[in-house]
Image (tube, rainbow, N blue to C red; front, side):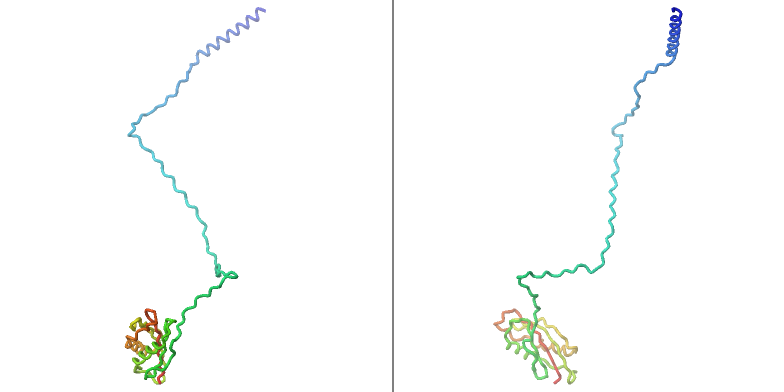
Length: 214
C-alpha cells in the first residue's frame, strides 16, 4: 500500500513544480488607465461653428384646375311671396309734346314744343316761345320745292328767359337747314321770363322744326 501512495504523491509533486515553472516564465501584465492626449487651445483662437440654416420646405405642386365649359347657373329674381305687394319697375319719363306741330311764321314752317317738366301747365308761355323762334327763322337758300325737312333743337330757359345748353338733338340731314334752326334759337335769346307759378329753376325745351316747301 505504501508504494502506490508514495508514487502518486511524487507524481503530483512533479506536476506542481512544472506548473510553477511555466507560470513564472510568463510576464505579468497589469492593466493601467487609458492615456488620452488633450491639446489646450486659447479661447480667442477657437473658431465658432455655425450651423447652416435648414433649407425651406419645397411647396407641394397643386393640381391644375381646368374651367368647366358651360353656360353656368342662371339666377332668376325671387318671386314675391303671396300677400306681398309686387313692385312694378319704374317707367322711364316720356317727353310728350305740349304743343303739336302747327304752322307758324310766314315761310311754311311748322313748330312743335315739348318740355322736360311734366307739371308745366302754362300753355300760353309755350306759344310765346314758339312764335318768337318762328319769327327769327328764315328758310335757307338751296332748299328745293316740295322737300320735307325736320330737325329738333334742345335748349334750357332760365328764370329770366336766358337760353343756355343749346344743342341739335335731331339733325335733318341737311347741314344748312340745321344751321338755320340753331341760328333762329340764338336770335331769340332772351325769351320771356318763366311764369311765376312755375317753381323750377329752368325749363328744358325740345323744339321741333318742320318745313315742307309750301
